[in-house]
Length: 408
Image 1: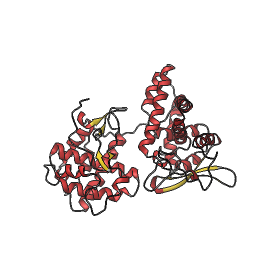
Image 2: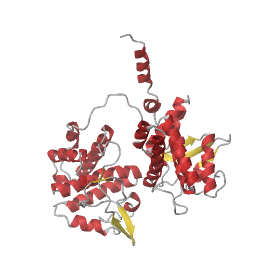
Image 3: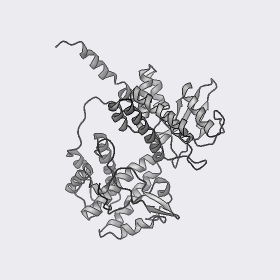
């Protein structure tokens, strides 16, 4: 990839720092480079673009970190593209411009891509400096940056909400996103069988074994083993194990009822708390991790320690750090599979993400005969139909079964 510098820089920091900005201030005091960049652009309306986008993100930053992150990413990329490539304000973009933008998203300029996900800003002497290694798009991973249908739908949904907000504020004259979405050649109507992305029994066995070997060789990887086991066994979303502005998972969230059953209370999607049931086998991983941290074998109702502790004592870790921890274990699992001759399985495992562990845990429980309604409750699905479609797909299984007996 070319080493030519990317002409822009990140515009909005993580929710933690973004929420420190006064509602009455346009730019963050701790990031003077952002103000210098926006004010220095030779684009009429750039300052207003930034101000309205900042106000838009402010309205979503308090809901959840994931909600803030998804709107920030799509709004930020569009702003940079409009300013740096089209040399105009986002409110001056017309349908053809936005169609051109979808072409750019489908195949970004190499200078706008990075092989790895990098932090937007780094703290340097009390200042949040833009990370020169950050890029708006990531080129690494399965598909080399290509979006799937779900990702395209998310992009159009986020941008439509963005433009509707700008219209409501009498800033944008209209919203062209719906017609751009309708004519988008990259968005395909998928009617095939929807199968959840998950690990096979073999892949999970190798991943868990790799995490155990890492922990045995280096005690610092006890955290790696615990994170992998927790995401899969408790079927958690990455956000449910990470520290967020409104949530810090602590050890007292593991609790025992009067019958001796263990549960984990989490704060999930839709701002809903739920209790996840815990297996006896998983408790051994909890005990092992707590022993490594010098804690009692099992937590009590007064245990205030973060569930996953950062290198800084009594602090949790964010979703990015959790993903990096899991990716490290996935890489080791891939190496072990390749060493034993399972090259196809290793290639599939290389494409896995942290969310696959949630799907894997649920799928294996369903396959083992656990009641679907119990799995649904642990996952936090509002409807058992959602759980069935993702992990069982009864209708298609019956269709496949009835087809097997048909003659040629």
